[in-house]
Image (cartoon, rainbow, N blue to C red; front, side, top):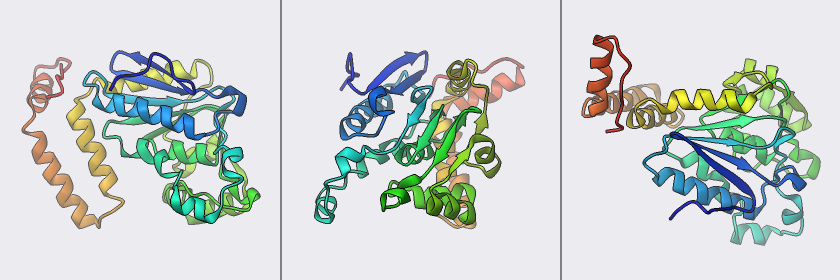
Length: 261
């Protein structure tokens, strides 16, 4: 499997060890149609398999990261349709990526767009970013993890407020509550995010994957079980050539040259 020369609903660009995936449905504010998700997942599968890529950056446009699900596709569906075809399940692929992921969110991240951003490991925004789960206004509620990830990120009270009222949250409040990893200036926003991505991508990829795995396990296990798992992964890191290189480089006061092995 290889990246397509041209996708219909996304754009891809490889920058050293980073792949930039841009959602591209400008006529629909990057609404998450089935075709867009198919394109996104095809690119994600390739990024995971490509040994030259260490990190995935997902972004949208300056106006909207993604304005939610494609309502026109959902409008006519019935209960039975959703039982027979869980169209939301494919959205979860980015949350299952072993490699680190960054959501670079500019403009609106609403509904499924907010949920997609929360599936990434880091969520970087600028002062123009607004988050929201307005599904309640359509007579439904978030179902791509919004009722689960949002309370874990910002707490039950604030998640209830956003989901039950459908209100939008400014980036500054989102950062204070822990939804956003960093807020950086909208001036040259994407370039700044890619610099952060480049810095992370230069680390040892096996160590990045293990660190990500250890952090994610903390949501599914008790503290004592999590510490045991963390310690096992830490011991495993000492089987890596990168561990030897990293520590030797520190002793020799030079930059480590990791080979992802």
